[in-house]
Length: 373
Image (tube, rainbow, N blue to C red; front, side, top):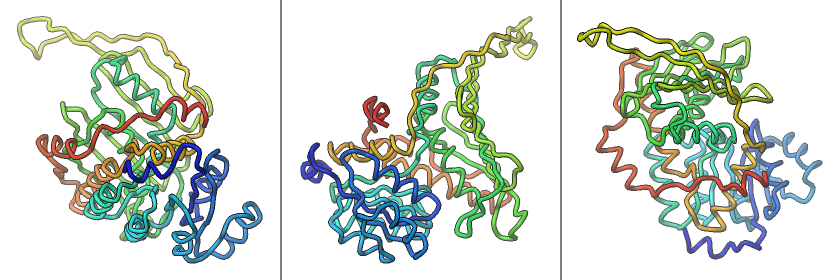
């Protein structure tokens, strides 16, 4: 990675290509064009209408229906925002062509593909990053800091709800579409990954495509993670709760202000006799505090972190290994979903240490990146 980074000095303008200008692509294109030190060189998409719309806003950018034109357009890095079934072949071809790669979630369709891309990027000395955008959300970063400092005590469980009416996708079910966000947030906040997962769901609209799902993730030290995802809800919900043995925190991504609320509430128990089961419960009702959260668009912070990693040759926060961990959870959850919700082992504690040993500690997003975004 260092060898390639030496070619991209801090003064060189990095040339970017984007493959995929559908739902998420325009947001990526806009942010790349706005970041100092980055130039949008080429965009590929199969839709002529999308390309025509982009031509009005980005007349200096090469627009094409052939992704290979992007890889040969003199770019340094490519961002892939296409259907998940194309992620692996496109990313592999880009890495083989010597390009740094940022690939949107879900990383790949199989963990074997994620592992192959991660190892290939390391072998080629290239930056491979997965678009787990919420890890770059200032509110999620602040939430992680609260948990890691022990401000809410020991974590008992986490609960996430990501609900809306649509958008239905033809290529993946609701599990693969929405759950990567909350799995990556939980892994990021706790600093570890689950060992077991189970999932149940419903196929309300399409007989073979789950549109509602409930996941239960078992983390080390008995911490439970619960995720509810749905394409069939009347109101948009993006809520994430962390319950500690001293305090509780709610992150609400839908509201414009006061996204984090810390509740000084809890329950404690004291034995009233020699029998452990015979105890008295004490309820604590304190106030609610709202910590300050820096402003900044998460996607722009993410892209700036990608650029910084290219320049410095450092490993991204949401690197290929991080993406692999999320894909392994999704694979196991998908199996559980198809087998009546049976609990599936992802890996044991010993395997966790092996995985951690394979990937160096990931750097945090710098304060400069947050401030510039």
